[in-house]
Length: 161
Image (cartoon, rainbow, N blue to C red):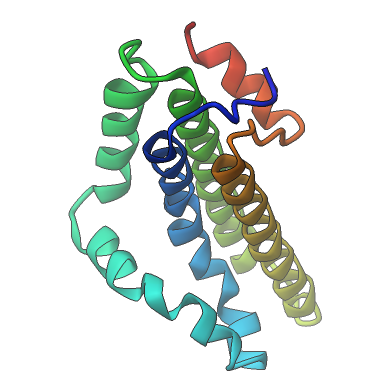
């Protein structure tokens, strides 16, 4: 199941595009790093129009989730490679949403010395998303399933054959 190097280029590209969703959602966690390292913003500058569009649509995240889940993941007419990567990207987005919610709840209750802890958690989350998305993009373009521990197993269970 790991190697699908026989896949057509459009299938590989479509699979890779799915990972833009968690990347766009994860940009918000990079604010501390962007302030500390302004040149890092240049790397993510091409995503700005997509981020603005994504955030300007009311309930955009929920709509994107349902569209991808029902039109891509559950659509057995599409190649399983595309459906698997869409589901894995959705799982990354869910993790980011839950993490953002938990961080916002705990941020209000943190004491005086705890902003460093919050900044460390947010930076770790951002870097984790960037690494996971980068790895997944490379693997998709190579025609291989991106194996991310726990996420890949969950995505395999959700994607019908």
